[in-house]
Amino acid sequence: MVYPSLGAQKPSASEGSQREGRNARVGMIDEPADKPDITLTLDRDGVIRNVAPSDDLEDEALERWRGRRWGEIVPPQLVGRVAQAMEASRRSGESLCFRVQQLLPSGRELPVEYTTVSLGKDAGFVAIGRNLQNVSDLQSRLVDAQKAREQDFWRLRDIERRYRAVLDASNEAVALVRASNLRVVEANVAAARQLGLLPGAEFLPELSARDRKALDGALEVARSQERAPNIALHLPNGSQWSLRASLVTSDADAFYLLQMSALSAPTETAPDSDNLEQILHRLPDAFVIVDREGALIKANPTFLDLAQVGVESAVIGQNLKRWLSHPGEDFSVVAGLVQRHGAVRMMRCRLEGELGSVTQVEISAVGDRTPAPKTIGLVMRDVSPRESRPERVSEIVDLAGGLAPPKDSLEAVVQAAVETIERRYIEEALEKTGGNRTLAARRLGLSRQTLHVKLNKYKLDPP
Image 1 (cartoon, rainbow, N blue to C red):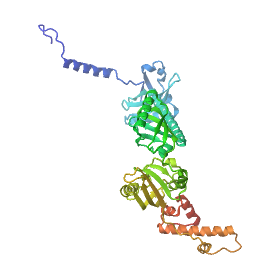
Image 2 (cartoon, helix red, strand yellow):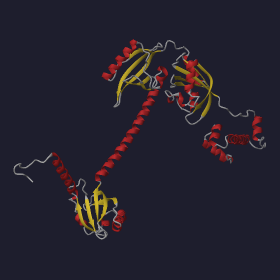
Image 3 (cartoon, rainbow, N blue to C red):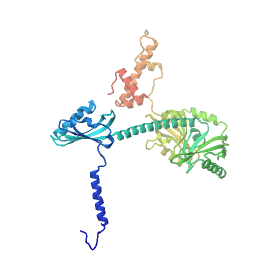
Image 4 (tube, helix red, strand yellow):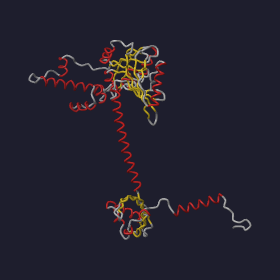
């Protein structure tokens, strides 16, 4: 009521918000946000009595569907699904949802999702259809984007593989250094071997003040111009190196690509260093040089064989703990003894290869200086127990059960002896390992698959 003396009163803020809320609710009821695109009213027998298209489908002559059965306007493979939906609505009033490629009177096809709503057992039901064209387009774009992403991933992997191959094949020392802290991110074999540049290490921390100033100036030029001219650096060992710096940027950080080539050899290098390199390369015992943390700087082929690795570049920069990891016999124990006593002699350890082999080795190690060595050299001798092998022909003949008749050829005699010896060693290995084929194969130096073939050949079954 409005009093004459007061006139019309302005509604309060709370009353206004309540009224707006009521209007909003009424608007939500009158105009739903997600309208159906096709609404079919069907009788209990599935005959279309009324069609209500959305505004987007007003140009389609959907009125032609009146009087036709619902199953006549869907693809043949979905007629059974439509019949199932109508039967469920007729019997129990359950609503079913399914998708079809709806063929419209104009010949256009749309992906439509229908939901059936029962109006009662005798009143029929309503089928509400929603156009999924936008969803289908989004799914197609998502699939295309995923395929493009996978192609980019494999393309980048291929580029990275080629980049790594080029780096390792280069005679120059190449290192990628983080611009913020001058820590090595990546380095090729030449950089690790000749300069000791390993991932995570600081780049040439022992430079003189004069060379450090020249290096900082070159890096400053690289930051501003993306490339700096060559400068000469003098290392503590007396060698001179030419350094060329380039700036490499990414979304996450900035890096320096540093390329270094030797201008002069170290003054303390012995004249027969090449001969020493050849001797270490041909050494029958495994030999490695690591830093104080265990990262490999150098490894000879014998170590690569024990570690079951193909090339030296695959182990440079890796930690020796990867292969010496048995508790009490790992690299940290060896390094601790070298730190305290300066050397280690004939320490028994287990070296585990990449493919599962386990080798008993005796390790002798020494640091480059005492105390606090920067690098450690280790010699590893294979001392795995080996089965005694007959070396004389008479022992082989006795083990094979005697010579074959003279009429047999030498090849047949040798083949019979080999098979007999092979059979006996397999039987002994299975007996000593309690029938464990994996341990027996490892003891014989065979793969498990090869042992399985030989067991079938000699008709042997583990106990």
